Image (cartoon, rainbow, N blue to C red; front, side, top):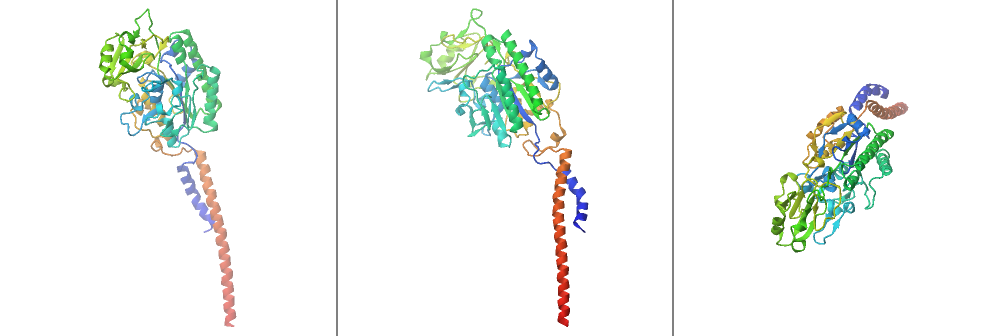
Length: 489
């Protein structure tokens, strides 16, 4: 049989094989953008016109509200969303496990305290044996980036996020033009540099909530700015042809409540109940509704007894007695005396120097501490209203969307599974993290024809070679017979 005859028999087989095998270069997951608007309370969009957010609720998923972890602060909450413990940490991924227990990095020996923005590239504060999703995803072949997201500028077990932009200490948080420029940069990361996972952080409406209070016109104006930015984001996704390839999660770290001030209430001032110079070695107070104290040696009981019933709106505990429901106090960084105030009350140390009109850091059961969750993209259902859930469940959801095998964690994909569209290719793919590839009919055929062409070339060469050899053999046979006859003569 000739080479072409063999090809005729093999062609249907090869095309059938190609249609069942994946096409190299196609990913089995869509890209993911996680956006956080700091301090966006769960109901901020209900007293102001937000057409773009309203449209997203129709085109995607909206949770009734999201419960952040305690303590309801920026760095602890953001890191809970993005991180998990290593295998050495079996308890999960609460704040007491990942160790980012406050916005401020501090040292009880030197008495140094570092503000929120100055901690952003300090690896020693963030790297406590847990792996943020950036690193886990990178180790499984994903390309990741952080744009101002808390923790994105640190290294974890010596490994940095592949692309990281960190806020400077003086970075302005409310420039709408810059917000749009940041979106354009991120879109280019996705399209021109093929990033798979990007986190993007905005410092509003937290700042305006602190400065003016959550129930003010200033805050409502800022929510309208955020809504315009979300509209710009949607248009940018369309311009970059990412509508069918990019999932977006929009969330926040905590809510905001109005601060109760004198003369309307009796404010909490710790120096009214204890002498700092006699009893206290180090403290983290004057920072909203949460505080910690390191007593001088032998003074822990004295501090505790003096403070535990000092003010009707102050809750004081020894570290080992702090309520388990907070999943907070077991980390070694937590100081021996832990306290939190009732909603709206600030914990002041020796002077009342904290003049914010809005604040957070309070018990996460308060509705004013709840925040938002919105999501849209090819893997999310449309017009889906989700029940409230805890922010720890965002991590397994993101792993699912990225096709990444998660680290051990306390979240559950079952909580968010109903948000997702069940694609046929998702049902057939391997376990998360497997490098299976998604295929499409025309690409399958093209791939199959490429294989057929290669086989054809091989068969043609083989056929020509075979013909030449046969001809040479016939000539040799003829010469052999000729010489043999001459010998007989």
